[in-house]
View 1 (cartoon, helix red, strand yellow):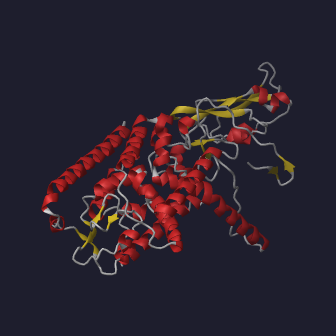
View 2 (cartoon, helix red, strand yellow):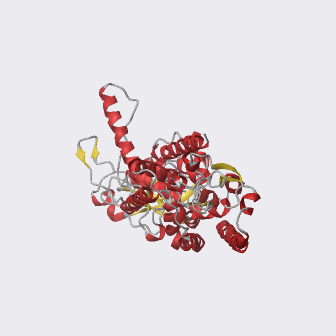
View 3 (cartoon, helix red, strand yellow):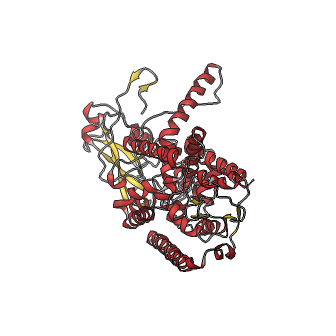
Length: 502
């Protein structure tokens, strides 16, 4: 019964979190966006002490329920492992914990977070929720969007407009490759060893593993009923049950409850661990047991110190015109400073808190956000205006960010936040090169920061050119996106390191 409950909750959580990355309309986030905001590393980076405490208490009570129910990457591995289990049953076996690898990956993750911007991409690669987010947004989302476009096409032929087409395009080759490699590695590891990634590489699994050693409820082996058949160990995807010694490594147990259903004698129960269970050990092993307890305490204190230290330091292209004429693609200008979304406060704050989960990229309706290919900010979203511009009435990215990289803002706030300023390039402007009237940038500026003035001050009737009021410009990119000049716009947005209110 416990296994069925766990499976039901895991499937529901996994399906909804996946849909959060697939739903390009952003509709689901109003109801289920909180599922992204209870993921472990994002809530630590967002300094959400209440949720962190809740997850810690949940682990101390029930073990690594987070890993088996809430974490989408963990559930994804279970799905792969389940398919592999249909080909070969009873395929697992007990293996000793690779402590050097677990602690090493945790130390690398902590150092990467503490080191700041230069090594933040390393932390993003190891973070489980963000790893799954990149897989969903780069590999699953295009398939979902192609399916949507097919339905839109069929519906249109039936004179129905229940669906609308959306562009499917490669936002970042480097991020796509990383997502694909992560996807393949996870499938191979899960197919062969179940939860190998969770118990050898994942830093969240290691931290929660320390806590789960002290969990109140856990699977317990009743030696009076156990006949040593080893069926539980051969079905343990975490490879943490030593059936010969009648021991379970609770730091690796993900509370999947599979062993409870597989044991035909009812020798394993999910219950409160009693002191008497440890007292059954031979007297000669008392010193060894004491040593293990000391090691466990030291490991727990070390993990707690790492977590607390990290938290404390964190506190400091459309192709055609009307379906007829081919339009030359715009190229991305060489910006001295990348543009980060309104609500990010500053480029540094964004870089330190963003886990590159791609959730904001997935829900951006204007196709402005895309993963960066810069090694210093690898996979973290940045703004570019080749396909659209940041509309003042849209606040989707600030609504969905779970890590505090983009703070929630209102529509009124957004219209007053300056994330950059427009720069006019005389050599590219068709008013100069083609000697023709334009004014497209001025007409579409939502804050009237661009005015058309006479190119010759002494001749009011001379050709008009744009002039930018940089104090008024908010950097939305409407001018850059709608500029008819190709391949480079005659006006582009330069990002600001620190945002300010105008």
